Image (cartoon, rainbow, N blue to C red; front, side):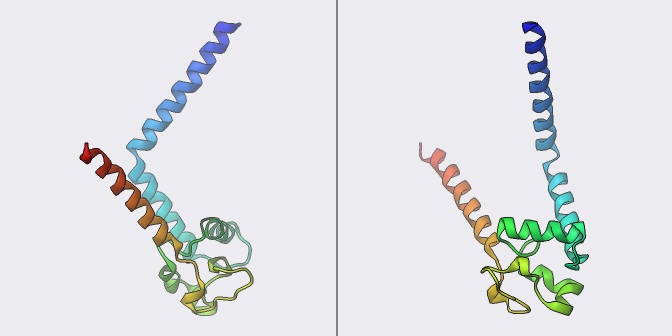
Length: 129
């Protein structure tokens, strides 16, 4: 019984290892696929409660960002031309951003810069030694 348990644990570990390797090898394709699908969802956004619009709202609320790369991505959408930015782009609770870019989240740029800074620090740490 214990050998069977160890065998299943080993099998699960190997499956996770293969999944990690495949994810690493195809990371660029996965990234491009996510970006393209998110961009399509942004273009089809209509705030009527369909699953794509709900997903866009959830992502923007959770990550405190607006658009694929920044808030300017919304300017190419039909929703922006009709109503402006969606509520999920708001920095503050209860705002109605409409077309005022000062009221929307653009923290994704800050997150990206923080990531680049941490990579630079990590790379320079090994060069010092």
